[in-house]
Length: 345
Image (tube, rainbow, N blue to C red; front, side, top):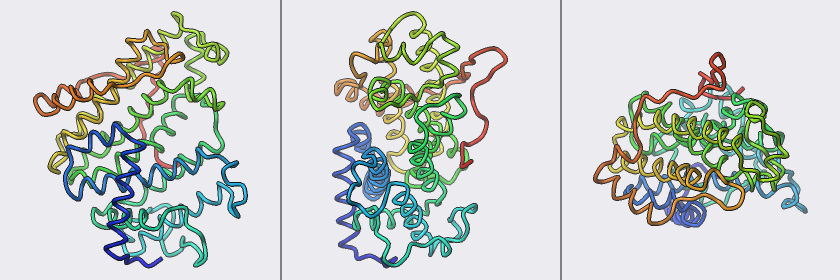
Protein backbone atom coordinates (compact mmCIF):
# COMPACT_ATOMS: atom_id res chain seq x y z
CA UNK A 1 0.00 0.00 0.00
CA UNK A 2 1.17 3.51 -0.67
CA UNK A 3 2.52 5.43 2.28
CA UNK A 4 0.22 8.28 1.25
CA UNK A 5 -3.47 7.48 1.70
CA UNK A 6 -6.34 9.71 0.71
CA UNK A 7 -7.88 11.99 3.34
CA UNK A 8 -11.19 10.21 2.76
CA UNK A 9 -9.67 6.81 3.58
CA UNK A 10 -8.01 8.18 6.72
CA UNK A 11 -11.25 9.81 7.85
CA UNK A 12 -13.11 6.55 7.29
CA UNK A 13 -10.50 4.74 9.36
CA UNK A 14 -10.89 7.15 12.26
CA UNK A 15 -14.66 6.67 12.15
CA UNK A 16 -14.27 2.90 12.16
CA UNK A 17 -11.77 3.10 15.03
CA UNK A 18 -14.28 5.10 17.06
CA UNK A 19 -16.91 2.41 16.54
CA UNK A 20 -14.46 -0.33 17.54
CA UNK A 21 -13.51 1.55 20.71
CA UNK A 22 -17.09 2.32 21.67
CA UNK A 23 -18.11 -1.31 21.26
CA UNK A 24 -15.16 -3.07 22.87
CA UNK A 25 -13.70 -0.61 25.40
CA UNK A 26 -16.53 1.11 27.22
CA UNK A 27 -14.37 2.43 30.06
CA UNK A 28 -11.73 3.78 27.69
CA UNK A 29 -14.42 5.32 25.50
CA UNK A 30 -16.04 6.93 28.56
CA UNK A 31 -12.72 8.42 29.68
CA UNK A 32 -12.03 9.65 26.14
CA UNK A 33 -14.74 12.29 26.54
CA UNK A 34 -12.04 14.31 28.31
CA UNK A 35 -9.96 14.36 25.10
CA UNK A 36 -10.69 16.60 22.15
CA UNK A 37 -10.14 16.85 18.42
CA UNK A 38 -7.29 14.95 16.85
CA UNK A 39 -5.99 13.57 20.14
CA UNK A 40 -9.26 11.71 20.68
CA UNK A 41 -9.28 10.33 17.14
CA UNK A 42 -5.67 9.22 17.50
CA UNK A 43 -6.45 7.44 20.77
CA UNK A 44 -9.23 5.55 19.00
CA UNK A 45 -6.90 4.60 16.13
CA UNK A 46 -4.35 3.18 18.58
CA UNK A 47 -7.01 1.26 20.49
CA UNK A 48 -8.41 -0.22 17.26
CA UNK A 49 -4.94 -1.45 16.29
CA UNK A 50 -4.50 -3.12 19.67
CA UNK A 51 -7.98 -4.61 19.58
CA UNK A 52 -7.60 -6.10 16.12
CA UNK A 53 -4.30 -7.66 17.16
CA UNK A 54 -5.89 -9.07 20.31
CA UNK A 55 -8.81 -10.47 18.30
CA UNK A 56 -6.35 -12.18 15.99
CA UNK A 57 -5.03 -14.20 18.94
CA UNK A 58 -8.27 -14.69 20.88
CA UNK A 59 -10.02 -16.10 17.82
CA UNK A 60 -7.60 -19.02 17.91
CA UNK A 61 -6.44 -21.28 15.14
CA UNK A 62 -9.95 -22.66 14.62
CA UNK A 63 -11.10 -19.26 13.39
CA UNK A 64 -8.49 -19.42 10.63
CA UNK A 65 -9.71 -22.60 8.94
CA UNK A 66 -9.60 -22.16 5.21
CA UNK A 67 -7.12 -19.31 5.53
CA UNK A 68 -3.80 -19.68 3.69
CA UNK A 69 -2.02 -18.15 6.70
CA UNK A 70 -1.78 -19.60 10.19
CA UNK A 71 -1.77 -17.38 13.24
CA UNK A 72 2.01 -17.13 13.75
CA UNK A 73 2.36 -16.16 10.10
CA UNK A 74 -0.30 -13.49 10.48
CA UNK A 75 1.56 -12.04 13.45
CA UNK A 76 4.72 -12.02 11.36
CA UNK A 77 2.79 -10.13 8.67
CA UNK A 78 1.67 -7.70 11.36
CA UNK A 79 5.31 -7.02 12.23
CA UNK A 80 6.08 -6.33 8.59
CA UNK A 81 3.14 -3.96 8.20
CA UNK A 82 4.23 -2.02 11.29
CA UNK A 83 7.76 -1.77 9.88
CA UNK A 84 6.29 -0.43 6.63
CA UNK A 85 4.84 2.55 8.50
CA UNK A 86 8.34 3.57 9.58
CA UNK A 87 9.96 3.69 6.13
CA UNK A 88 9.77 7.52 6.14
CA UNK A 89 10.61 7.64 9.87
CA UNK A 90 13.79 5.57 10.26
CA UNK A 91 14.83 7.61 13.29
CA UNK A 92 11.79 6.26 15.16
CA UNK A 93 12.21 2.65 14.03
CA UNK A 94 13.13 -0.13 16.42
CA UNK A 95 16.91 -0.17 16.87
CA UNK A 96 17.08 -3.88 17.59
CA UNK A 97 15.19 -5.14 14.55
CA UNK A 98 17.18 -3.58 11.74
CA UNK A 99 16.24 -0.89 9.23
CA UNK A 100 12.54 -0.80 8.25
CA UNK A 101 13.51 -1.27 4.60
CA UNK A 102 14.86 -4.72 5.42
CA UNK A 103 11.63 -5.82 7.10
CA UNK A 104 9.04 -5.09 4.43
CA UNK A 105 6.17 -7.40 3.40
CA UNK A 106 6.07 -8.94 -0.03
CA UNK A 107 4.05 -6.96 -2.55
CA UNK A 108 1.27 -9.58 -2.58
CA UNK A 109 1.31 -10.28 1.18
CA UNK A 110 -2.18 -9.95 2.71
CA UNK A 111 -2.64 -7.50 5.56
CA UNK A 112 -4.23 -8.45 8.91
CA UNK A 113 -5.87 -5.00 9.05
CA UNK A 114 -8.77 -3.30 7.35
CA UNK A 115 -7.20 -0.71 5.01
CA UNK A 116 -8.89 2.41 6.35
CA UNK A 117 -8.16 1.55 9.99
CA UNK A 118 -4.51 1.02 9.13
CA UNK A 119 -4.47 4.30 7.22
CA UNK A 120 -5.72 6.09 10.35
CA UNK A 121 -3.06 4.32 12.41
CA UNK A 122 -0.33 5.38 9.97
CA UNK A 123 -1.60 8.96 10.06
CA UNK A 124 -1.57 8.93 13.88
CA UNK A 125 1.97 7.52 14.09
CA UNK A 126 3.35 10.04 11.62
CA UNK A 127 1.50 12.99 13.16
CA UNK A 128 2.57 12.29 16.74
CA UNK A 129 5.88 10.63 15.91
CA UNK A 130 5.23 7.50 17.96
CA UNK A 131 8.25 5.15 18.13
CA UNK A 132 8.00 1.68 16.60
CA UNK A 133 9.26 -0.40 19.53
CA UNK A 134 6.00 -0.39 21.55
CA UNK A 135 4.09 -1.79 18.56
CA UNK A 136 6.61 -4.58 18.06
CA UNK A 137 6.60 -5.32 21.80
CA UNK A 138 2.81 -5.61 21.69
CA UNK A 139 3.09 -8.23 18.96
CA UNK A 140 5.65 -10.04 21.14
CA UNK A 141 3.02 -10.08 23.88
CA UNK A 142 0.50 -11.60 21.50
CA UNK A 143 3.06 -14.26 20.59
CA UNK A 144 3.45 -15.11 24.28
CA UNK A 145 -0.25 -16.03 24.32
CA UNK A 146 0.46 -18.57 21.58
CA UNK A 147 3.02 -20.45 23.64
CA UNK A 148 2.35 -19.75 27.34
CA UNK A 149 -0.74 -20.71 29.32
CA UNK A 150 0.89 -20.62 32.74
CA UNK A 151 3.33 -18.23 34.43
CA UNK A 152 5.73 -19.51 37.07
CA UNK A 153 7.01 -16.21 38.51
CA UNK A 154 6.05 -12.57 38.79
CA UNK A 155 8.99 -11.61 36.57
CA UNK A 156 7.48 -13.69 33.77
CA UNK A 157 4.04 -12.18 34.27
CA UNK A 158 5.42 -8.66 34.59
CA UNK A 159 7.02 -9.03 31.17
CA UNK A 160 3.67 -10.17 29.76
CA UNK A 161 1.85 -7.25 31.42
CA UNK A 162 4.38 -4.83 29.97
CA UNK A 163 4.11 -6.23 26.47
CA UNK A 164 0.32 -6.43 26.23
CA UNK A 165 -0.60 -3.30 28.21
CA UNK A 166 2.39 -1.28 29.39
CA UNK A 167 3.38 -0.54 25.82
CA UNK A 168 -0.07 0.90 25.13
CA UNK A 169 0.77 3.64 27.60
CA UNK A 170 3.97 4.28 25.68
CA UNK A 171 2.02 4.55 22.41
CA UNK A 172 -0.45 6.99 23.93
CA UNK A 173 2.05 9.24 25.67
CA UNK A 174 3.04 11.25 22.53
CA UNK A 175 -0.65 11.61 21.65
CA UNK A 176 -1.46 12.94 25.11
CA UNK A 177 1.29 15.52 24.83
CA UNK A 178 4.61 14.85 26.47
CA UNK A 179 8.15 16.03 25.97
CA UNK A 180 9.41 14.93 29.39
CA UNK A 181 11.00 11.51 29.72
CA UNK A 182 9.74 11.30 33.30
CA UNK A 183 6.27 10.48 31.95
CA UNK A 184 7.38 7.38 30.06
CA UNK A 185 7.84 4.74 32.76
CA UNK A 186 4.72 5.86 34.69
CA UNK A 187 2.74 5.44 31.47
CA UNK A 188 3.94 1.85 31.24
CA UNK A 189 3.15 1.36 34.95
CA UNK A 190 -0.46 2.35 34.36
CA UNK A 191 -0.71 -0.33 31.69
CA UNK A 192 0.84 -2.89 34.05
CA UNK A 193 -1.65 -1.93 36.77
CA UNK A 194 -4.61 -2.22 34.44
CA UNK A 195 -3.50 -5.57 33.05
CA UNK A 196 -2.98 -7.01 36.52
CA UNK A 197 -6.45 -5.71 37.43
CA UNK A 198 -7.84 -7.56 34.39
CA UNK A 199 -6.06 -10.74 35.45
CA UNK A 200 -7.47 -10.58 38.99
CA UNK A 201 -10.95 -9.88 37.66
CA UNK A 202 -10.92 -12.58 34.98
CA UNK A 203 -9.58 -15.62 36.87
CA UNK A 204 -12.69 -17.67 36.13
CA UNK A 205 -12.88 -16.72 32.45
CA UNK A 206 -9.19 -17.48 31.95
CA UNK A 207 -9.57 -20.89 33.61
CA UNK A 208 -12.36 -21.68 31.15
CA UNK A 209 -9.80 -21.01 28.39
CA UNK A 210 -7.23 -23.20 30.20
CA UNK A 211 -5.13 -20.18 31.09
CA UNK A 212 -3.77 -19.22 34.51
CA UNK A 213 -2.02 -15.86 34.59
CA UNK A 214 -1.50 -15.85 38.36
CA UNK A 215 2.15 -16.66 39.17
CA UNK A 216 2.38 -20.29 40.26
CA UNK A 217 5.23 -19.48 42.63
CA UNK A 218 3.05 -17.01 44.50
CA UNK A 219 0.03 -19.31 44.56
CA UNK A 220 2.19 -21.92 46.25
CA UNK A 221 3.52 -19.35 48.71
CA UNK A 222 -0.05 -18.80 49.89
CA UNK A 223 -0.82 -22.53 49.98
CA UNK A 224 -2.99 -22.49 46.86
CA UNK A 225 -3.18 -24.88 43.92
CA UNK A 226 -4.77 -24.67 40.51
CA UNK A 227 -7.40 -27.12 41.72
CA UNK A 228 -8.38 -24.60 44.40
CA UNK A 229 -8.95 -22.05 41.64
CA UNK A 230 -11.07 -24.47 39.64
CA UNK A 231 -13.23 -25.11 42.70
CA UNK A 232 -13.73 -21.38 43.09
CA UNK A 233 -12.77 -21.69 46.71
CA UNK A 234 -12.75 -18.39 48.61
CA UNK A 235 -11.02 -18.97 51.92
CA UNK A 236 -8.39 -17.28 54.07
CA UNK A 237 -5.59 -18.39 51.74
CA UNK A 238 -7.29 -16.92 48.69
CA UNK A 239 -8.18 -13.68 50.46
CA UNK A 240 -4.59 -13.20 51.59
CA UNK A 241 -3.35 -13.92 48.07
CA UNK A 242 -5.77 -11.41 46.55
CA UNK A 243 -4.91 -8.74 49.12
CA UNK A 244 -1.27 -9.17 48.14
CA UNK A 245 -2.02 -8.84 44.41
CA UNK A 246 -4.33 -5.86 44.91
CA UNK A 247 -1.65 -4.11 46.96
CA UNK A 248 0.81 -4.68 44.10
CA UNK A 249 -1.63 -3.35 41.53
CA UNK A 250 -2.36 -0.24 43.58
CA UNK A 251 1.34 0.40 43.94
CA UNK A 252 1.59 0.48 40.15
CA UNK A 253 -1.40 2.86 39.94
CA UNK A 254 0.30 5.14 42.47
CA UNK A 255 3.55 5.10 40.50
CA UNK A 256 1.61 5.89 37.33
CA UNK A 257 -0.01 8.89 39.01
CA UNK A 258 3.44 10.38 39.49
CA UNK A 259 3.84 10.85 35.73
CA UNK A 260 0.49 12.47 35.01
CA UNK A 261 1.73 16.00 35.70
CA UNK A 262 4.12 15.76 32.75
CA UNK A 263 1.29 15.42 30.19
CA UNK A 264 0.63 18.69 28.38
CA UNK A 265 -2.27 17.95 26.01
CA UNK A 266 -5.59 19.64 26.82
CA UNK A 267 -7.66 17.21 28.89
CA UNK A 268 -4.92 14.56 28.94
CA UNK A 269 -4.18 14.64 32.65
CA UNK A 270 -7.82 14.30 33.65
CA UNK A 271 -8.38 11.58 31.05
CA UNK A 272 -5.50 9.47 32.38
CA UNK A 273 -6.57 9.95 35.98
CA UNK A 274 -10.13 8.97 35.09
CA UNK A 275 -9.01 5.90 33.17
CA UNK A 276 -6.82 4.79 36.08
CA UNK A 277 -9.58 5.57 38.56
CA UNK A 278 -12.19 3.53 36.67
CA UNK A 279 -9.93 0.50 36.41
CA UNK A 280 -8.69 0.89 39.96
CA UNK A 281 -12.30 0.86 41.13
CA UNK A 282 -12.56 -2.73 39.91
CA UNK A 283 -10.18 -3.62 42.74
CA UNK A 284 -12.54 -1.94 45.20
CA UNK A 285 -15.40 -4.03 43.84
CA UNK A 286 -13.34 -7.22 44.19
CA UNK A 287 -12.79 -6.33 47.84
CA UNK A 288 -16.50 -5.58 48.28
CA UNK A 289 -17.27 -9.07 46.96
CA UNK A 290 -14.98 -10.54 49.62
CA UNK A 291 -12.49 -11.44 46.86
CA UNK A 292 -14.95 -13.77 45.13
CA UNK A 293 -14.04 -13.40 41.46
CA UNK A 294 -15.48 -16.82 40.61
CA UNK A 295 -19.25 -16.38 40.93
CA UNK A 296 -19.58 -13.00 39.19
CA UNK A 297 -17.44 -10.49 37.32
CA UNK A 298 -16.25 -7.46 39.26
CA UNK A 299 -16.83 -4.16 37.49
CA UNK A 300 -17.19 -0.40 37.85
CA UNK A 301 -20.84 0.67 37.66
CA UNK A 302 -22.09 3.55 35.54
CA UNK A 303 -22.84 5.47 38.70
CA UNK A 304 -19.30 5.03 39.94
CA UNK A 305 -17.92 6.10 36.56
CA UNK A 306 -19.99 9.28 36.67
CA UNK A 307 -18.83 9.98 40.22
CA UNK A 308 -15.22 9.47 39.20
CA UNK A 309 -15.70 11.70 36.14
CA UNK A 310 -17.04 14.46 38.37
CA UNK A 311 -14.11 14.02 40.74
CA UNK A 312 -11.72 14.21 37.78
CA UNK A 313 -12.82 17.84 37.37
CA UNK A 314 -13.24 18.79 41.01
CA UNK A 315 -10.48 16.81 42.74
CA UNK A 316 -8.46 15.13 39.97
CA UNK A 317 -5.61 14.01 42.23
CA UNK A 318 -8.07 12.05 44.36
CA UNK A 319 -9.11 9.94 41.37
CA UNK A 320 -5.64 8.53 40.76
CA UNK A 321 -3.57 9.13 43.85
CA UNK A 322 0.14 9.67 43.76
CA UNK A 323 1.65 8.06 46.83
CA UNK A 324 4.87 6.59 48.07
CA UNK A 325 3.43 3.10 47.97
CA UNK A 326 5.99 0.34 48.29
CA UNK A 327 5.68 -2.80 46.22
CA UNK A 328 4.54 -5.75 48.37
CA UNK A 329 7.08 -8.48 49.02
CA UNK A 330 6.40 -12.17 49.02
CA UNK A 331 9.12 -12.56 51.63
CA UNK A 332 11.43 -10.02 53.28
CA UNK A 333 14.34 -11.06 51.07
CA UNK A 334 12.40 -11.67 47.86
CA UNK A 335 11.31 -8.47 46.09
CA UNK A 336 8.98 -9.30 43.22
CA UNK A 337 9.21 -6.19 41.08
CA UNK A 338 11.47 -6.33 38.07
CA UNK A 339 13.65 -3.25 37.80
CA UNK A 340 13.78 -3.33 34.01
CA UNK A 341 11.34 -1.86 31.55
CA UNK A 342 10.13 -5.23 30.45
CA UNK A 343 11.24 -4.78 26.85
CA UNK A 344 11.92 -7.63 24.43
CA UNK A 345 13.88 -10.53 25.82
